[in-house]
Length: 492
Image (cartoon, rainbow, N blue to C red; front, side, top):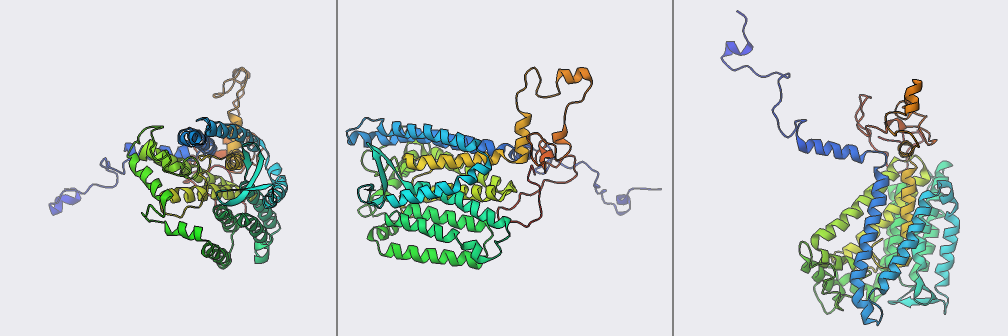
């Protein structure tokens, strides 16, 4: 008599591979796993980076306006000015910056490359003009401002950040097209000498915080260009040696380094009171406008230490929200740089992302007492029109690059409104004539709307899931310089 395998041994039969698995954490019906899958698919959609950059930067700017108004009222009243004085100036700068953002977002990539040299020449001229007596002015001990008349001033070193990103990206992209980046002299010259010239002009005014940001942008461009490790370490060593000499020769900078992690309120007044502000905020803060430290205890409450006032008034929830917005903005910038096949777009997007991320880390690290106070504002958040305008133009660059992806162009073209037609399911005229709706954007590469190259654009729907191809989602391209073989640049 035939029996089961377990009938001879007296053991119960073992369930085979065809048995239904027990519901658990790895079950497809698990709601957590379904939520994670949906989040991954949503993040891999063609327009996700575009919406994250636009929405994240807008939220940071709006929240920054609110906090500038709250943090600057007492300072304005102490200076015999209206309470909304600094807020109105920041609002005007945000409106002008919004125009620059929209203009940059609508410019083609060729125009961005054409603007690289004029912006660099203008930045160098203005930064040299700062050192001319009677034109340049000193603020908080740093000679890096130009008075425009009245209460308006400009800081040319902020424009220098944008100039280095655009000019450096265009330079490295042209060298890559000519296959010159394999030689170390073409990797360094003239990028490093020009960057050191900008650093020298900045350090003549004593602004080491801006010099650190410019150095971070330089290293970001070298890393994206695929600089060898020994070359990268060599440039880093030279920069570190110069920075060490500048710190050793300045008592003020030595005192700032001594305040890292220190609780001495007599020598580290600003750093300690920044910690007091964060500590008194609790989970949800004392309420908007209810900060105590901004009443003369915390210097630069609406500029360099606005994050401390945010922690005091909005609590841990508010500070974590700001950190999450900056993290999303940085991650979206990395995604734009990693998915493009255009060398200039990759270097420019990586440079802008390095700039904003490094500046945010340095500012927040100083407020938390983890880094020395460098005197740099929080991007898009702190008071200061000279810093806000170039940063918003740089955000417009990222938006333009995110829109320029082939898959994003196809998705935007499909979302254009059409008079008398339904956007989905085909038009009524098409149904009467018996024609099938155009699905070429999702069927064949090379024919996507918007005039793109079409490589990878057939993945607009089902982004990143690999449906219909039998393969899993592809990995992003690396941000560093890749081989000459072409790779898909659309949805992956």
